[in-house]
Length: 489
Length: 95
Image (tube, each protein chain N blue to C red):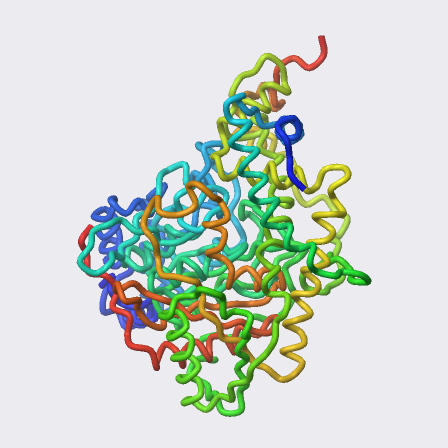
């Protein structure tokens, strides 16, 4: 039952082939048996069963919502009323929100149920899920003939691993520099970062407010389309949420690519990029050409500066957002000899190494005398990055195809311990999309020589997620089927 | 640009994060690695370019000037590490 796609489970529930309660029970049994993967920080089986019972009543009357009876995992960055929300940080351990985030409220409105809160990099800062205070997530994937534990990617590592391991039918995630798309690529799942403003950020723990966006991770393009439709929508509680109708994304699937122009940016061809990533990209181009799309070369000349500008903008905004964790209103407090000492001790103990480092970089680039040289300069470069994309789209390009990541998943502890930049480079292909506020989707497209999944990324015009779903479904259909790992855990 | 140990201590204080003496030097190295990485932005000519202030061009919306919340002091202070009678309590600030 838990191997079904979300769409098939939804249809089977409507046909009453099994009940929402049976489905929730099967899913709870699956996650009970998967503790080794460390996907969940908190499990909420009682809530899942209570919601399933309510769904069964609605389904019996033929009055189910679009997600009626579907058990989901929720990234532990989304505030959930009455259920601990930590952002995977010690500083928020024990925090019980008295309110519900808008996106999760939308999912419950549409009939979904919650299995628990999914692990992530602390405050979503990381690309491997290794910075979590609650320990790393272990990917359900392993290299062929090798039991080395691998990272699921990050920051939405728990979301991606849980979906790939069939512990839930889909999961919420968030993406500030690649945190939905990179873990999706590492785990053979589909992840979409919608246009900035498409989903409400209200009730989602803030990292970098001008870059953060909510989105789903799922096992198929169709499942991601179904989830995004429920998650998205205008919310007066988030002033950057956009008041636009939410299309039926599922209806966009399977559209023809005849007359569609797909841009290929040469700047994404990095020196020293592995041959298998290049081959995957060429294969993707061939599939889209076969489906009738016109392939055009485009230039995005400021691509190479995106990651550096990101590592000014994101820490700057984080240092400001994370100033609220002061040991006074919620979370951890470490006593001190006076109030300043209490703040400093609380934040030293409550934040992990990577978070402290980013807050300090952010504090530095915003400090007197450096603001113009760093922050304002980075925001000007952001304007140039966005303009590159606008030029391509104005020339008639409908979507842009790139690899999602420069490599397949790596082993736990293999990267970034000596040099933080080594880890940051994971986001080199995804971060431009956040800087420009555009939508991007990662779709599984093949496997590496060692048998690990690889993803292709499609970048679209603002608020044109439909084209992304449509083109991604063509890649999904053309690509060899990604066989998710069988249970070893 | 790069930072010295005194600057690391100053940033840590501005960020209200206590840094042990033994951690200052490693942190200096890490911060300088990041600052060296972002140096590449100096290659870009940004003369006449406006800094991005809004990701998606839209007018700032304001909400109606009405009371839409309140009388939830219990909830507001429920997660406080220390609270008394709906007040957050902190170490003595004024002697």
